[in-house]
Image (tube, rainbow, N blue to C red; front, top):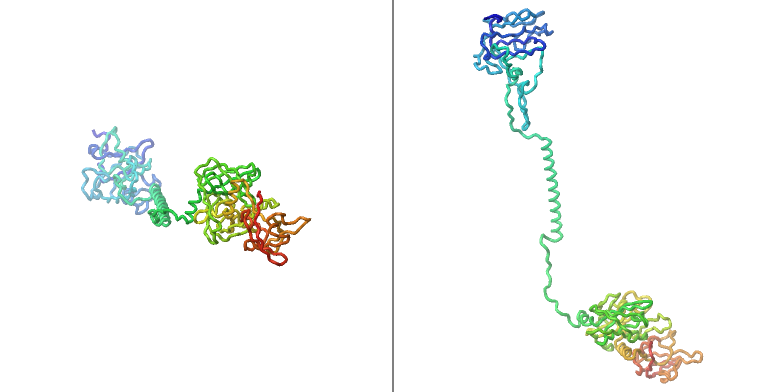
Length: 579
């Protein structure tokens, strides 16, 4: 019954068997727990390894792996006091039986009936303090524990020469075919902290990539928000500064009805005269032009300047545009270059409003006047001024060179602006009555000139007095021609003295027309005419202007200087057909 079993004393719970060398190819057999087999089962162990076997020396005062003091020896291992002698080294199958002696140290505490690892029960050695392991950071995933690791989850190196110590419990017999104990006992670290679930404590968050990215995103968002807010604030500030506030600005305004204008005001005059003023567009074979005219009667007769319709010639086109925008084709009724006047007529037009004619003899210097026309083809243009002078003898035209197109006008001078395109338009008084026909302006370089010879007004405009214009217009409408008053003499236009000198006899011909008005009044060649109706005459042109301001058949009182003596002569004006 006891065959094959050892008879040595059983190992006590405080014995610490030393692992011996394992046979190659065999796994070390762990010792079973005390509660796993009957008490009489012996503990099978390998002989303890000696220093010679491992080739190491023991240092004086050193301790073995279990904390027991060892004594240095020259040739053998140091053994603890009262320890049984080991079996001869190398004896096969010789079990090493550990037994307690009466002098062995007693346990300090009662045995643990439950055999709780890692200590199983109280012993003579104080346990090592728990190893402080770092607690994983908050939020760090913790892998589950597994077999083959120490108490902190670290893998244990596999030693082929030694066997891990079993837990300090009483050895119990175990059948050969019994399953080995749980792997956690094979990898048990007696000096490690007991295996416990990891418990993390909340702590301050540590910066990581995600938090850094989030913080950076928040910073960028804050900067963008600041930029947008700054832009909006700047725009609002600029708007407030420009407009004076967030609300729209409404300026006070006079809500009274403007009502009408006084008839003698410029606005009243213009409102009354404009419907009777027209714009003429003339085109001929070689040239074209623009001018102004005004309605004389309800039959469609329109008065204008001769130089306005001259470009049309005998086959050109004349288009009349009324102030309301209506247009009509016009035909020349009559024209005269000496007076620089012409009459055209439109047909098939109803509702015409004639412009009333005034009396130019009643005009005084300083009287307010209004000029209406189409300067530079800007129709219905109104300018105002005063009569700055009367009886201004002017000559205009003369482009032909033979003097046949020269006009002589005893004109009204005005400072109302007159520009190219105003020619033929009315110069009206405060009653909106025509007192003159705008015909010429003063050229800055060459004296008085036609309106076409000056680029712009310099404040010196000239109008044919309406009294003369009325007489010429009536003749042109009634006969198609105008008659000129004449005295029947040829004047010396090169005379530089004061007055108009009658030319001398050349080639047997007399400068005084035989049987004419001058011949009948006793005027001789070489006489100098100095006055007409008591008004001084300074040149030949001025004499012609004075004569043409009258009608044929009128009587004139002339003052003539002959041989240093002044003579008074009266004559009756004759007539000549104009061109």
